[in-house]
Amino acid sequence: MKNLIELKNIWLLVKTGFVNKEERSGKELVFFLLKMLLILLIFKISTFGVAYFLESFNIFKIPANLNRLKFENSSDFEILFMIAVYAPIVEELTYRLPLKFSKWNLIISLMGLILAILRIFGEIEYLYCFLSSVGVGILSYFFLRPKRIEILREFWTKNKLGIFYFFLLIFSFLHLINYEITTEVLLFSPIIILPRILGALVYSYIRLSSGILLAICFHAFNNGILKIVTIIANYTNGLFS
Image (cartoon, rainbow, N blue to C red; front, side, top):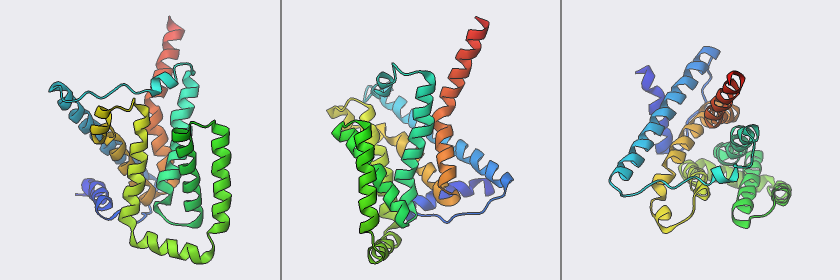
């Protein structure tokens, strides 16, 4: 039964939007992360199975990911930095940090949301997006006076489930920009973003039960491991070719 406790806790997160933080020894932490990797792998296989089923019956085919075109002129290490360093840090601080309320957690998340919205929908240069997000963060710091903080804290406490799903779905649906938006893509968007939803569920559980730093590291490992293996394989082939 101990092997199923993480699945039970994830199910608790699905139902309530929150789990308590747990203290773990070094050994327990290693086993915890291994279990999280196994659960994430099972989720990925499940989503692949759904996609394969739909494709085999000519119902729907997952469209090509446009990120490949965005990165076609980038080096392997530039790609690795973007997917395994930049993306995990920004995404975890934006969508998982505010699952536990504090003034700074809210400000940092708001800055990340502004950055994402301006980049995605405004198509503004990154520097101006970053400066705008910093400006919003500064204004938010002075706007969020103690009374407003207490009101928001109470709201967070009473609406954990809604807040959890708000950030999970925003994170997941924003990844639709990785595909060419068509009527078919919008119609089948829940299938397309299902891997993101399940991944966000795992990241959220790690963030709440073990802290934001571990969530960032786990996200980075998940994003970057295949690229690291590819870089090593290419380097090795170059040595012996």
